[in-house]
Image (cartoon, rainbow, N blue to C red; front, side):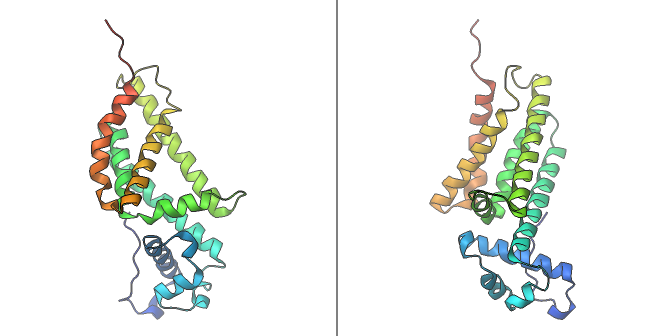
Length: 212
């Protein structure tokens, strides 16, 4: 699923409420590429869109609902990208490889997404947006656990591999790539580094070979 875009060419009075909501989500994602989440204020969103704050809140009741819509888009778009990748792979292990590369490609295209997710999760308590992020992560880990279990059953990974723990390393490798890329300011190079890292990651899953 493509990142939603601000449509400045379309006359604003012709936009439906759903289209304007998607414009607001697109504005948040665009701002997240440029600044920290704490600087994505309602005024910043309105300025990016060229509207007033009041115009924003005709389509969302409050800022929390805007964030919920942003994370709902992230979940839908990432799940669609992963599903497309899995559908093109022939075996469970190939599907895991495809998921890894598709996830990194999604982040490279939407570099602000990890920033807003980590920012949302760092606070105690709960909120609808935080619950959406947690639900997304839990569902993703379940998907990975299922693929690791299938890869073990197919003989592609050793039977002693902990399929419930393996996703921790998988996601940790992606998060490490994100952090390294952010530090050097090279999100566009994540895909290349992911392809270089993937064989090492898979080698680790195979574990120590028994000596004859």
